Image 1 (tube, one colour):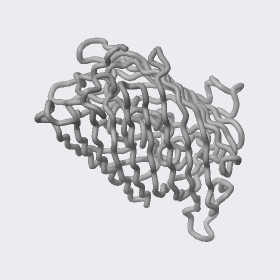
Image 2 (tube, rainbow, N blue to C red; image 1 turned 180 degrees about the horizontal axis):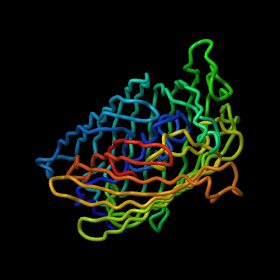
Image 3 (tube, helix red, strand yellow; image 1 turned 90 degrees about the horizontal axis):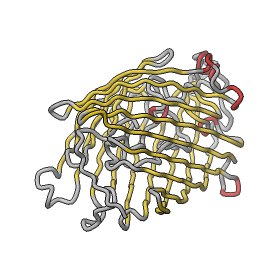
Length: 398
């Protein structure tokens, strides 16, 4: 077996995709829709600096690295507030020189629009990277605006303020099957209740979703196939990531809705020089069956794409693709520039129509949190078709 070495030589981190989505409590983003919680370590969709690293000094004696980041958040979807993050990055066994470092962590969320949340996360690499075990639990309430389903609803800008309260758990076990591929099973269970946030007598701008005021349970089993060839998963400078998930929500499992959710991600990384990296990302999403509105593909979630409020554009199908240039600077700093395009559609026959395309672009700064593993703090400003967004997080956008 080829030995993998995680040097963290670059000053920055790669994204650990878990609390990525700034919007809805749904089955595929960590706040009930961990969207890509299918990712290596811990990340919060957050916003603004403040971070400390410990376990640096005597790295030869200490087992891991602690990352603390009490980050302000300024989100178009959730408002302004604070996301305290605490994560521990460490080798599960000191004598295992092949497995990537494991991560355990927790985070909170408090904003001025009344949103509150708590998340706990674990990503473990076992037996010389033969097994990978991931689990997370999220509980809280999200206050956000529903614009309706479809690109025309998002462009109209009419919205219904909602509060979604609930919890979700996801567990996953993968096993190496050769050629850097991992295959395994996953399980979702969660419940939430949605209520309107409008005063009595005020007419909503958009029709309310079904099941208002009813506790809705979603439960699914699924499969995941993943291949990752980068030597440093926290800040990849070469290699690729291929990730496919399929989740089957079923009434037979106790779920309120029966539907299927498919997600495909492809990332490619290349070094232009010692301090320069070019990163490419493609994300494709599809939904079948009869999902709740938050079970659809959601544009703007998981940084797909930055520049859009998560949840404004959602539908059954979606694609997003983007390119990002990353530059390492002295004194732990860095800078990035990025651009991309995508769309959401109700059916495959409508894809690639020019009037449906949603472009975005922007730039950002980076600051290194962990020298040992190359984990960084991210701050990005982006422009979409009709909105600006600014956000921060731990790790790169993809």
